[in-house]
Image (tube, rainbow, N blue to C red; front, top):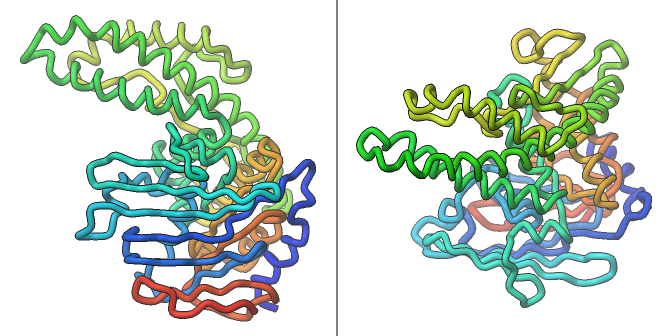
Length: 392
């Protein structure tokens, strides 16, 4: 039996999660997005498979699904990078069912960086407000590097997920990015213009406030993530290994019982300690941008000592834990996007992912299309368009 049947059987639970609203992506229309001049794709309530050779645009289609849900690219791309080469703008339109209501999300991207976000004909001030209806978790081959990769990989995981759960986190993240850029310009330019130092205390205090909010949310989230991932990892490893996640942030911040005032005090103390070092290096040496999640397997640092198989199992547990937390907090299973990740896994881990993907809507991209279960929509991508679309 083809392993896609694992997804199909698990999706029988759709709409039956505790307190769940029925939410699904029905249709996605693209104009000048990535390699698509025009595309109109419909999705099945349970399982949709996007097939095609490498380089045809499968990942771009899943990126558009994620963008429709979150207002962000999973790649961290700027708007102009998502616009088809030679064009000045792009449009993405998603038709969504939300608890028996039809909702339309529309994003208009411009190479000037000005974006228009529209829901049911009304403009929105924040793109992340889309997550109030549709949410998504995306799993790519790059996510298998969560364990061995740099700290920025793990921070992106936190930012993507928490932004969908906590709008104030997204606001603090945007404020952090703006203030960090200002402070960096001061630290790099004060030798040529000493007057810049007059602005440093103001930027420092504002950045500390934004970072304290980020660290507060991150600490709370990682506690939940650690517990979920520990259980999932034990299941996948048949109880032979124990996974531990530890949030690493500024010294003096209590991540077990996070308090914003305590965190801000710790940031302020550390900033005073490193003031001269920041001026000498021209870099921000304090703050949420230096946070990390330490991952250990059986008490040993996974980044340095885990085998390839152990690292993959840990990454799977973390990503699936992310989805379970979102399902619990939102009262609905988020759209699950699996971008060619199954081909990277052995049979046991592939089965583990699919078995634990119960509830909600799943979109899988693949280069090799095998036997598929009934009522699966298959979208075959070729040369930046849909070559065929069938329902099994």
